[in-house]
Image: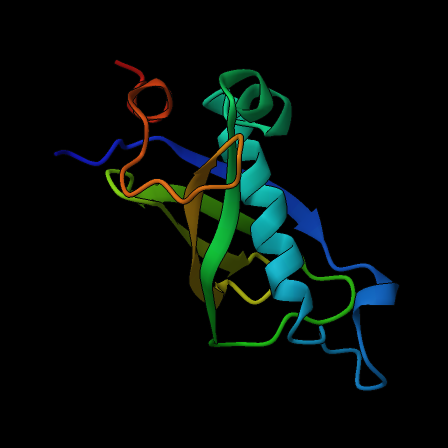
Amino acid sequence: MSVPSRRIEVELEVPFHDVDGLQVVWHGHYYKYFELARTALFRACKLDVPDMIELGYRMVVIESKCRHVFPLRYGDKFRVSAWFKEYEYRLHVAFEVWNHTAERRAAKGHTMLATLDAGGNLLLATPASMSTRVTGL
């Protein structure tokens, strides 16, 4: 099963409230940045929360990871990219944070989401109604 090539990019600037006393972004905020890009990706595929409710499904995060490569600092302009790596059994979304100010990658990571039916039961495969939205087919 081929993985779709859809990639979403979100452009941001590090706000003051995301940094510590050394003006470096606190490590936990990277997950917030990932989530902003993931939400944009899911909206582009019509898999945002209202869409999922309409389809009769829910999603839960089952794994997330972030590898920090270079710090983001107060005022840095940066881009967060998100794309699907796998969707057959779970939605595996990969991320890259690119620091425009320093001209280098700041972080990379991923989030995996499992699908639940309306009753909260775990589904062992991504429903076709969701897969077709991911692939665009």
